[in-house]
Image (cartoon, rainbow, N blue to C red; front, side):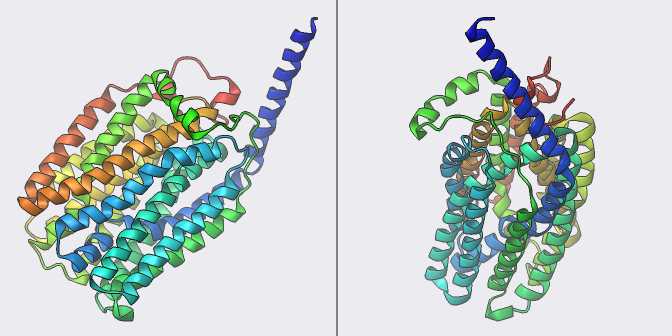
Length: 444
């Protein structure tokens, strides 16, 4: 055998040994990692949902500004930050054999922005409080864009594909139950009773405590070290390689466009509660009920979405959740009493829950493993860019015309997203298996 062939054989054997070691690590530490994954979701996601739900932050911003457009602009800063940092986040992790150390550092920085939002609400008022909220939401977005890419990549490494749907569902279920209870308590008692002199500040402080407990749970994870990682290259060079990567993944491009269109349709989200306030009394208790309905429906539906995903794939969940979201938005336009608004918020929460679990997991099924951080980042960039544009566009429309136009446009955009997703092939049913070091762990 020639030296070249011998060297190639040895290299292939070494790759196979490394892959077997990786799969063995995933199997041995699965229970430990799954428990940490669930604990992080129950605590960390609870806090983040208090910040990202379409209730407390929009209502707080509207209280400070009295302007629908300002609400859209400030929320847009958060998503603009996430769009700006996602690709950069991919280039920070795709050459690393382990991403946990960086994820931990960035995660704590994200949580400090939630603390800053809480303290600014407690100590500042008027224009100063509004400016501080915009700054902290922008920084929250910038850091969260990096955190999301890193955490999704970590999930794809440690949770096997055939267990991902059920575990993600349980994670969202327990996290959602906690979030729903905390949201109701926050609206009913913290905001309603103006705890600490500012109920919104007290709610944001609760979010900081919960997210801090959540990231502490990640210390229990055991991440495998990968050998098949990219060599570090400059940011500009890596970005120039993205078009070729996308041309090789036409179904990913369809998914990317569909997910971005749904994100643009989120232009209506900051105005759900404000719209309800034009028809019913938006007291602290009412805000708590609507938050409870939204988060509880998002939570309970996740068990169904997760089971459906494991049995039929995330593409079906993606399509079904978009359809439900469209129907719930249409119902919102017809509401005139608290009961109907609660029902509409249940549909909105369930639709968002299905979209959340399917969009975040479906993206992890495309491409080779070493390309996955960049595909995650590209999908995130498109989504967050649309989520940045959406609130501004929605705010401009809501400021000048009736709310129905904002919701009608959101419905139309989601219908386009549904059509695009319908044309996408399910990556789980791609012909022929990928080589072991290119797919997900333990898929066969």
